[in-house]
Image (cartoon, rainbow, N blue to C red; front, side, top):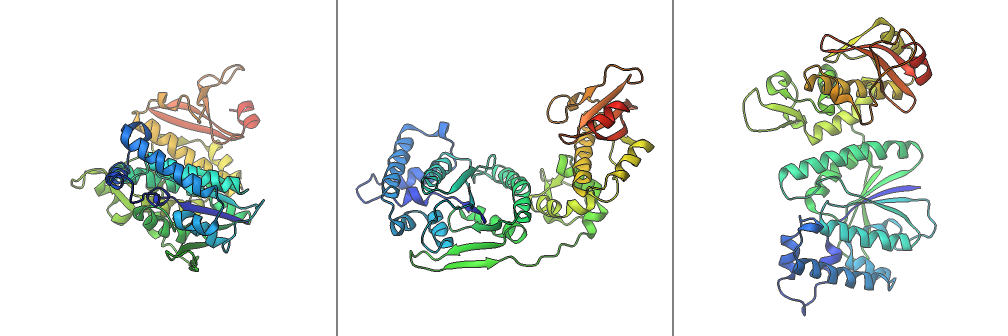
Length: 380
């Protein structure tokens, strides 16, 4: 089984422009490359629709050689299957599209075509991913890293062979995906710009991450992943490539994780967060809570617990010790009611099954118990 991620560009549109078309169409596509659907003017929207209709008409001819010429993404996918798309395959395909009108239009064309061939295919659009500006691109890349971490490792563990198809897509995204592939993919594929060219395959390479700095700053990394920013001076021993400076400045400049820092943290956090209980601002651990943590033998449950603690700590500290920011959302923070002995006790959710009980004390939380729903609610 294969899990194939294909970066999507706009070649399927630009390849439909012919000599009889208005000369400004290429300029319209270029100038609107980073616009969303509601930002397109009438002329540009009409040009994109015309080109998309032409592409669809050609795809419906089911001519594999033609399809490989008009779409770089399909050229790579055909290459993975040695020129012939399979029927009723268990493979899963995801198209990584930019958060733009053209990205969504081209992704939709390719998705619909592949689905008609019997393949399982979905589109994933990282929020704000475009080359509009550095901030938008960085936000999109971080969103993509989160998605990769949530969707790739468990599939590899389940027997899927992960393939990054980077034949299509815009160059800045391809550069990042090529590096991401070294951590997530079994192989990265390219292809020469020729319908008969062989696939270029880069196999997974053994990469060993130096975790010494991450281990030393493990609490800070966990909190930055949750949203905390620090003055640069507090992170002086962390390589700058792992950090993002929110503005130009001095040692007081607000600093968080860069895209590379997020990637490295995601690839190392499992072992770190499954080990000892980390100290977090505004959180105090009762002996009973520490005992519950030590009894938890599942590394994945420990990982999820500590990520949740980091998120709770960040929120309460950001709000100056108040807990109102915990209300609503996935934490399901609520006050216990009912039986005697529950006065002042709250709970919040870690997973669908596990909870933490706590009290509000001295501008923070004292954590009392951790475990399954019934365990925590019966003896909070």
